[in-house]
Length: 226
Image (cartoon, rainbow, N blue to C red; front, side, top):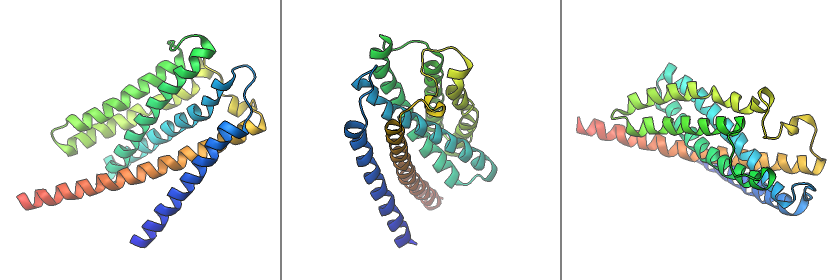
Protein backbone atom coordinates (compact mmCIF):
# COMPACT_ATOMS: atom_id res chain seq x y z
CA UNK A 1 0.00 0.00 0.00
CA UNK A 2 2.79 2.42 0.99
CA UNK A 3 4.86 1.43 -2.04
CA UNK A 4 1.90 2.03 -4.36
CA UNK A 5 1.29 5.41 -2.74
CA UNK A 6 4.96 6.37 -3.17
CA UNK A 7 5.02 5.28 -6.81
CA UNK A 8 1.83 7.19 -7.51
CA UNK A 9 3.28 10.33 -5.93
CA UNK A 10 6.52 10.00 -7.91
CA UNK A 11 4.58 9.59 -11.15
CA UNK A 12 2.42 12.64 -10.38
CA UNK A 13 5.40 14.79 -9.40
CA UNK A 14 7.30 13.70 -12.50
CA UNK A 15 4.32 14.35 -14.76
CA UNK A 16 3.67 17.71 -13.13
CA UNK A 17 7.31 18.79 -13.50
CA UNK A 18 7.45 17.71 -17.15
CA UNK A 19 4.18 19.46 -18.00
CA UNK A 20 5.19 22.66 -16.21
CA UNK A 21 8.55 22.79 -18.00
CA UNK A 22 6.79 22.14 -21.32
CA UNK A 23 4.18 24.81 -20.55
CA UNK A 24 6.76 27.46 -19.68
CA UNK A 25 8.82 26.62 -22.78
CA UNK A 26 5.79 26.87 -25.03
CA UNK A 27 4.55 30.13 -23.49
CA UNK A 28 7.88 31.93 -23.78
CA UNK A 29 9.46 30.24 -26.82
CA UNK A 30 7.02 28.30 -28.99
CA UNK A 31 3.83 30.34 -29.21
CA UNK A 32 4.01 33.55 -31.32
CA UNK A 33 3.39 36.98 -29.82
CA UNK A 34 -0.18 38.16 -30.34
CA UNK A 35 -0.25 41.08 -32.82
CA UNK A 36 -2.71 43.42 -31.10
CA UNK A 37 -1.96 42.95 -27.39
CA UNK A 38 1.74 42.19 -27.68
CA UNK A 39 3.79 40.31 -25.13
CA UNK A 40 1.39 41.01 -22.25
CA UNK A 41 -1.07 38.63 -23.92
CA UNK A 42 1.14 35.75 -22.77
CA UNK A 43 -0.35 36.11 -19.31
CA UNK A 44 -3.46 34.58 -20.91
CA UNK A 45 -1.74 31.17 -20.71
CA UNK A 46 -1.55 31.50 -16.91
CA UNK A 47 -4.73 33.46 -16.26
CA UNK A 48 -7.07 30.94 -17.91
CA UNK A 49 -5.53 27.82 -16.30
CA UNK A 50 -5.56 29.28 -12.78
CA UNK A 51 -9.20 30.28 -13.30
CA UNK A 52 -9.98 26.73 -14.45
CA UNK A 53 -8.25 25.26 -11.40
CA UNK A 54 -10.18 27.56 -9.06
CA UNK A 55 -13.46 26.35 -10.59
CA UNK A 56 -12.31 22.73 -10.34
CA UNK A 57 -11.24 23.21 -6.73
CA UNK A 58 -14.57 24.70 -5.69
CA UNK A 59 -16.42 21.94 -7.54
CA UNK A 60 -14.49 19.32 -5.54
CA UNK A 61 -15.30 21.27 -2.36
CA UNK A 62 -18.96 21.28 -3.40
CA UNK A 63 -19.03 17.48 -3.93
CA UNK A 64 -16.98 16.79 -0.79
CA UNK A 65 -19.26 19.01 1.30
CA UNK A 66 -22.33 17.09 0.15
CA UNK A 67 -20.66 13.77 0.93
CA UNK A 68 -19.48 15.02 4.32
CA UNK A 69 -22.97 16.12 5.34
CA UNK A 70 -24.34 12.74 4.24
CA UNK A 71 -21.64 10.47 5.70
CA UNK A 72 -19.96 12.67 8.37
CA UNK A 73 -16.55 11.14 7.65
CA UNK A 74 -13.40 13.21 8.19
CA UNK A 75 -12.01 12.15 4.80
CA UNK A 76 -14.55 14.21 2.87
CA UNK A 77 -14.18 17.15 5.21
CA UNK A 78 -10.41 17.07 4.73
CA UNK A 79 -10.71 16.90 0.93
CA UNK A 80 -13.26 19.73 0.87
CA UNK A 81 -11.18 21.98 3.08
CA UNK A 82 -7.93 21.25 1.22
CA UNK A 83 -9.59 21.95 -2.12
CA UNK A 84 -11.16 25.18 -0.84
CA UNK A 85 -7.78 26.45 0.38
CA UNK A 86 -6.21 25.74 -3.01
CA UNK A 87 -9.22 27.31 -4.75
CA UNK A 88 -8.77 30.50 -2.75
CA UNK A 89 -5.08 30.64 -3.67
CA UNK A 90 -5.81 30.19 -7.37
CA UNK A 91 -8.70 32.68 -7.30
CA UNK A 92 -6.28 35.16 -5.73
CA UNK A 93 -3.96 34.53 -8.69
CA UNK A 94 -6.89 35.13 -11.04
CA UNK A 95 -7.58 38.47 -9.37
CA UNK A 96 -3.89 39.41 -9.66
CA UNK A 97 -3.21 38.28 -13.23
CA UNK A 98 -6.49 39.75 -14.49
CA UNK A 99 -5.66 43.38 -13.65
CA UNK A 100 -2.10 42.94 -14.96
CA UNK A 101 -3.62 41.96 -18.30
CA UNK A 102 -6.42 44.55 -18.05
CA UNK A 103 -4.15 47.58 -17.57
CA UNK A 104 -2.58 47.54 -21.06
CA UNK A 105 -5.75 46.14 -22.67
CA UNK A 106 -8.38 48.42 -21.07
CA UNK A 107 -6.20 51.21 -19.68
CA UNK A 108 -7.32 50.54 -16.08
CA UNK A 109 -6.36 48.03 -13.39
CA UNK A 110 -9.91 47.28 -12.25
CA UNK A 111 -13.46 47.93 -13.35
CA UNK A 112 -16.69 46.67 -11.82
CA UNK A 113 -17.22 44.45 -14.82
CA UNK A 114 -19.68 41.56 -14.25
CA UNK A 115 -17.04 38.84 -14.46
CA UNK A 116 -14.55 40.69 -12.26
CA UNK A 117 -17.20 41.48 -9.67
CA UNK A 118 -18.59 37.94 -9.51
CA UNK A 119 -15.03 36.58 -9.30
CA UNK A 120 -14.35 38.85 -6.32
CA UNK A 121 -17.59 37.66 -4.72
CA UNK A 122 -16.49 34.05 -5.27
CA UNK A 123 -13.18 34.77 -3.55
CA UNK A 124 -14.97 36.39 -0.58
CA UNK A 125 -17.38 33.43 -0.26
CA UNK A 126 -14.58 30.92 0.16
CA UNK A 127 -12.57 33.25 2.38
CA UNK A 128 -15.71 33.08 4.53
CA UNK A 129 -15.63 29.27 4.25
CA UNK A 130 -12.10 29.21 5.67
CA UNK A 131 -12.88 31.79 8.37
CA UNK A 132 -15.85 29.76 9.61
CA UNK A 133 -13.58 26.75 10.03
CA UNK A 134 -10.82 28.64 11.78
CA UNK A 135 -13.09 30.59 14.15
CA UNK A 136 -15.38 27.71 15.14
CA UNK A 137 -14.79 26.59 18.73
CA UNK A 138 -16.04 23.11 17.88
CA UNK A 139 -14.32 21.50 14.85
CA UNK A 140 -17.34 19.33 13.96
CA UNK A 141 -19.65 22.32 13.98
CA UNK A 142 -17.17 24.33 11.92
CA UNK A 143 -16.98 21.49 9.40
CA UNK A 144 -20.78 21.37 9.10
CA UNK A 145 -21.20 25.13 8.70
CA UNK A 146 -18.37 25.40 6.19
CA UNK A 147 -19.81 22.46 4.23
CA UNK A 148 -23.05 24.41 3.84
CA UNK A 149 -21.07 27.42 2.60
CA UNK A 150 -19.14 25.14 0.22
CA UNK A 151 -22.42 23.92 -1.28
CA UNK A 152 -24.27 27.24 -1.48
CA UNK A 153 -21.18 29.19 -2.53
CA UNK A 154 -20.65 26.99 -5.58
CA UNK A 155 -23.70 28.63 -7.16
CA UNK A 156 -21.44 31.57 -7.99
CA UNK A 157 -19.08 29.44 -10.12
CA UNK A 158 -21.42 28.99 -13.13
CA UNK A 159 -22.45 32.63 -12.71
CA UNK A 160 -18.81 33.71 -13.06
CA UNK A 161 -18.35 31.47 -16.10
CA UNK A 162 -21.46 32.62 -17.96
CA UNK A 163 -21.25 36.35 -17.15
CA UNK A 164 -19.76 37.18 -20.55
CA UNK A 165 -22.75 35.51 -22.21
CA UNK A 166 -25.43 36.83 -19.84
CA UNK A 167 -24.32 40.49 -19.74
CA UNK A 168 -22.42 42.91 -21.93
CA UNK A 169 -18.98 43.12 -20.33
CA UNK A 170 -15.51 44.37 -21.14
CA UNK A 171 -14.16 40.91 -20.50
CA UNK A 172 -13.39 38.83 -23.62
CA UNK A 173 -15.91 36.17 -24.60
CA UNK A 174 -15.17 32.47 -24.37
CA UNK A 175 -13.06 32.43 -27.54
CA UNK A 176 -11.61 29.05 -26.56
CA UNK A 177 -14.95 27.41 -27.32
CA UNK A 178 -15.63 29.53 -30.39
CA UNK A 179 -12.59 28.51 -32.43
CA UNK A 180 -10.97 31.92 -31.99
CA UNK A 181 -7.47 30.63 -31.23
CA UNK A 182 -4.74 29.65 -33.66
CA UNK A 183 -3.51 26.07 -33.39
CA UNK A 184 -0.22 26.98 -31.70
CA UNK A 185 -2.06 29.13 -29.12
CA UNK A 186 -4.66 26.43 -28.48
CA UNK A 187 -2.03 23.71 -28.04
CA UNK A 188 -0.05 25.91 -25.65
CA UNK A 189 -3.17 26.68 -23.65
CA UNK A 190 -4.09 22.97 -23.41
CA UNK A 191 -0.61 22.09 -22.14
CA UNK A 192 -0.85 24.87 -19.55
CA UNK A 193 -4.28 23.64 -18.48
CA UNK A 194 -2.91 20.11 -18.08
CA UNK A 195 0.12 21.36 -16.10
CA UNK A 196 -1.94 23.39 -13.64
CA UNK A 197 -4.52 20.61 -13.29
CA UNK A 198 -1.83 18.11 -12.31
CA UNK A 199 -0.40 20.71 -9.92
CA UNK A 200 -3.84 21.01 -8.31
CA UNK A 201 -4.10 17.22 -7.92
CA UNK A 202 -0.67 17.10 -6.25
CA UNK A 203 -1.48 19.97 -3.89
CA UNK A 204 -4.90 18.63 -2.88
CA UNK A 205 -3.50 15.15 -2.24
CA UNK A 206 -0.67 16.49 -0.08
CA UNK A 207 -2.93 18.86 1.84
CA UNK A 208 -5.61 16.20 2.38
CA UNK A 209 -3.01 13.77 3.70
CA UNK A 210 -1.75 16.36 6.20
CA UNK A 211 -5.25 17.27 7.34
CA UNK A 212 -6.16 13.61 7.79
CA UNK A 213 -3.06 13.03 9.92
CA UNK A 214 -3.85 16.13 11.99
CA UNK A 215 -7.38 14.86 12.60
CA UNK A 216 -6.07 11.43 13.65
CA UNK A 217 -3.54 12.97 16.04
CA UNK A 218 -6.22 15.20 17.55
CA UNK A 219 -8.52 12.20 17.97
CA UNK A 220 -5.78 10.20 19.70
CA UNK A 221 -5.08 13.11 22.07
CA UNK A 222 -8.77 13.34 22.94
CA UNK A 223 -8.87 9.61 23.70
CA UNK A 224 -5.81 9.89 25.95
CA UNK A 225 -7.20 12.90 27.79
CA UNK A 226 -10.47 11.04 28.44
